[in-house]
Every structure is written in C-alpha cells, then in structure tokens.
Amino acid sequence: MTKLHRQSLVAYGQPLRETIVDCPTPHGSEVLVRVERCGVCHSDLHVQDGYFALGGDKRLDITKDRVLPFTLGHEIAGVIESAGEAAAGAIIGRRVAIYPWIGCGTCPACRSGEENMCSAHHHLGIAADGGFANYVLIPHSRYLLDYAPLSPAFAGPLMCSGLTAYSALKRLASRAERGPVLLVGLGGVGMMGLALARALFKEPPLVADIDAEKRRAAVAAGAAQAFDPTDPQSRKAVFTATGGVLAVCDFVGSEKSLQFSTGVLARGGKVVVTGLLGGNFSIAAAMIAIKAMTIEGTLTGTLAEAHELIALARSGKISPIRTHDRPLNEAQAALDDLRAGRVVGRTVLFV
Ligand SMILES: [Zn+2]
Ligand SMILES: [Zn+2]
Image 1 (cartoon, rainbow, N blue to C red):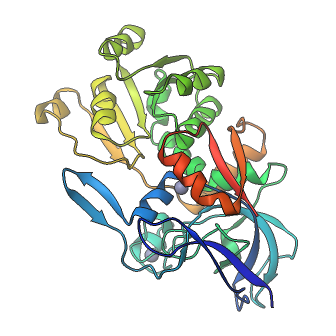
Image 2 (image 1 turned 90 degrees about the vertical axis):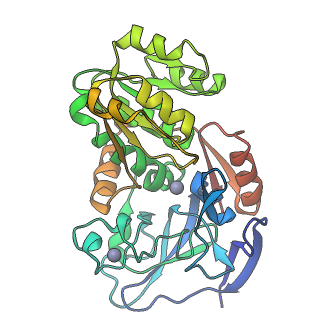
C-alpha cells in the first residue's frame, strides 16, 4: 500500500514532524492528488501557533475542530493520481492547482458561492489535511484548476497569496482608475499584489515596506515608488507624490500598518485589509466621516475568482513572483525563515 508522508503538526507551538500513514483511497467524487509543489504561507504560522494575536494579551484560539497530527499547506499544485467513480473530469495524470477554500456546501455563504467565507469549512491545511505531504485528498473535482503553461511553483501560491491579492485588488478597481494604488507590506501576498496590480491597473502601484531589500525588489519588479513607513516623513512624502491615495491594500494588518494605510488616504479613499499580523488599531472616530473613508477586510477569495485569476495568469499577463524551492522535509526550517522575515518572495516545498 502506498504510504502518505506528511510534515505534521503534532502539538501546537512545536516543530513539525514527519508522520507516515496509509495513503487514502478516493471514493465517490473524491480525487487523490500527488503533490508537486506546496507554498509556505504566513497563515501556516498562525495554525502552528494555534492562535491569532489580537493585541495586548488577547488571543483568538484556533485550535478547535482540528485533529492532531494535522497537515498544513494550502498552496498546492500536483498531478491527479486516482479518483473515485463519480469524480467527473478527474483524468489520471492531469496537472492541477487546488482551490483550498472548500466549504460545507450548504450554509448561506457556500450557497452564494463564497466557500472561503463558510463557517463550517473544510479549508485545506486549515481544517482539513493539506499539502505538506506527498498526496492530498480532495472531496470534489470542481476544486481542481488546470494551470498549464504555468509552473507548479507559481500555480500553487496563486490559490492563496495570489487569490487573496486578486480579491483585494478587485475591491479597489474603481478607485484605481483615478490614481495609483498603494500596496503596504511586501511579503508573499504583497509581491503577488504588485504583479497583479501591474496586470490589472493602468498606473504602476506605489509600495511601502519597512525592509529596504523588499522595497528594492518591488521597484525592480515595476513599482512606481517605494516608501519606508517607519520614516516619520513618509506620510508627507506620499501626500507630496499623490495628494493622498484613494486605494490602499494593507497586506500586513497591524496597528502600525493600519495607521500608515489610513493616514495616507485622500478623501473618499479605501483600505482593503488582507493581513493578519495582529495588534489593536484605533482611529479618531470623526475621521471616518470627515475623510469619507472605507476600511474593508477580505479573506482569500471565491472559487469563481480563482478561475478568473488562473485564466489571467495563463494568458501570460502576470509576471511570476520570485520563488525558492525547498524539499518537503525542510518545511519547519522554511516556516522558521518566514517567521524571522528572512524570505523575499515565496518558498515552495517540493516532494
Ligand atoms: Zn496562505
Ligand atoms: Zn458553508
């Protein structure tokens, strides 16, 4: 019997460890995918910790509804290995990216096509075993997307960091017609956001990050101008360059990033927040009305948006982000490097 080799979460806050079990056999609509690449994402760190920092001593516990050992990883591209008798279109050998934000299928969010917002979800690598493994079991072939001629190292991360950035930028589209978008935070999602903003909007985006190397990488990748938000003059510099920004995407989601993101808004401006770094953010209440400001959160994206995004990428309109391949058994080292901020671009595990 084929064995399933996984880099597993065996205890919260502890390093991943290899676990080996029998490989599942797909039944009915299920599909077994052999993993070729799986991206390493910031949210993997939160799952490993078992909580989100909410600011002060407050934590949002996210340990419930997950059975240990558990397999992280949700940015998966692979090859169909086998399929249940009712798995339509699941041709053996087909190379696919996996939409990981799988819902219950019956709640109001799922019924309106927003499985990413499902309250009883089976999101891969979050609530159901994910892709830090040689195989992953998918409940239905509708979550499999063709990605050729892209590389699997690009296609996998498109399903999380790409989709998150795409869904966020769509929410800024009308304002992006009136001026440049500002992207705050240039980690994996932010760099994907840069590539997408260049494909979707007529003006190249502005960027901000505390790390000079990341700012340089962004300018080299086509950003119009880069700002250091820790520089006390940076807010003024953004106003000098733009007169205030109408559209900001905050890929960090911390007190400081949100202060910067809301502080550079023009009247009528909007901040879309995808980041989950944590902390508390406060704002002078009157400024919301005085600036006619919108702050909107977004969480990954829908299956329909995943199809739109992968079509855009397959048409060659998105320049691939920088990726680094590492073997699956270095998953913990990859997480450690990500936590320490030592990664530019995306780390992608291979089996
Ligand atoms: Zn992710
Ligand atoms: Zn649901």
